[in-house]
Image (cartoon, rainbow, N blue to C red; front, side):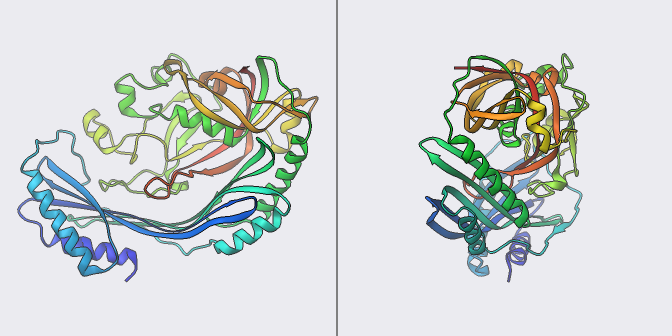
Length: 440
């Protein structure tokens, strides 16, 4: 029995033990993942993780309790363990107050997404990595395999999603702290795209092998790669797109929310559920829309709303969480091949780190440049730059100081592995801005 059938069989068995007016919500999050850690172009740790977490939420009126446990795939053992948990939840429901914001779907809507895998075997990926990077000092982590999400309730609803995804996050070191950091993620391996990344790596390593410049503090014309931009948007996402944060006035984008300012008209930012890796359903059984447009033509359009906020603020559920899990920024008109000419004289920033708010109420973000960042002069890279601090408002970066966005976008999958491999991602273009603030 595969994990999908095992999950639905277990949930059906638990439904038969319900009493009176109880409603049961069951969820499953699982993975079959190969992990490979490497440095100095040698594999240091390799292994596979197979894990499945079964979640229970028992509801009786406005009382509800939840619990999770891992399951083994042995039906009788798993059913016995989950049945004991269900009894414990039933006792707890008699001891806790009613929850005024309890919210779950009562209209069954079944969905299934269960494609065939198009992943390359992990061994072949490692062979290609070390073959392409021969003579380079490579360090990083590779994950490869299936992510499983399931939902079932006692009202008859069943939802399932299988995603086959790989994620390669690695750096090639020249010496000391001089390195080029690269990411490649997706559902199908593209050898031509992978080869293009190594061509870029070698070009940047050659450029890094020249004396670095220490720039004077000030404002510079600057290109931020999709990776660098993701570090800024990750910070802005801390409440920036949440309905609850808006109503509690804790959003870093409060000025945008209240229409006191706006971004450049070309900015269209959305939560693209249909094009991400997260499931199309929530743990409460709500079906997500294909897209939630958060910012349209530079102005606030909508918010991310989870089940509890939807009940509290009388809104429809459109997300599992109130921070983006499948962020998509619409591209612009700048061809990536013309980036250096478009910079003319200024900065090419590939990575940022240590990003955080310096002024949350104005969505002002600070951080450091890192890895392969260069000074460009007359449309050509002149030299790498030493580490500098930046401090800039998102209202500037995507507002008055924005020149253009690239035509090409990049999928950046999360590398988080807390509890399990993350299914979050961003699809972003690079951006060219005029007046990027640098300081020591």
